[in-house]
Amino acid sequence: MDTGTLCGLLATDVDHIEPGDNHDAGNLQALCRFHHAKKSATEGANAANAKRERRERKRESQGSARTQMLKSLRDSRDVTNDADNGP
Ligand SMILES: [Zn+2]
Image 1 (spheres, rainbow, N blue to C red):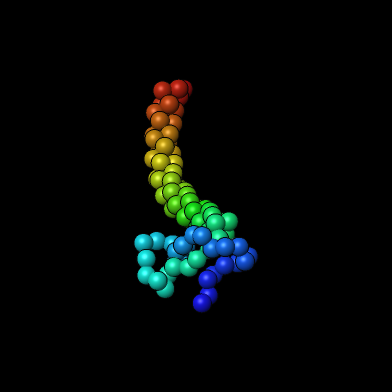
Image 2 (image 1 turned 60 degrees about the vertical axis):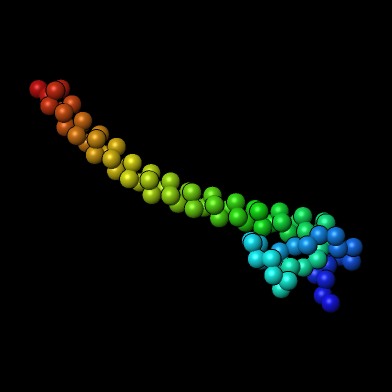
């Protein structure tokens, strides 16, 4: 049986091969505590990165809309200022 151990240490943890809620035996493997923690940390970092990228992409699109709005506000104010300060 392939225990999935990477280092020969006693496997004490059950790892989800594909992270998530799939508890089928085919998605579970035994890992030592060190490698399970390491794998989980990598998965957590990947998930956090994906989350941050989604958030940044959202902010960028919001940012451009906001920039467009501010630009149009500034343009209209410039027109007004020109009229006020004109000769
Ligand atoms: Zn290990």
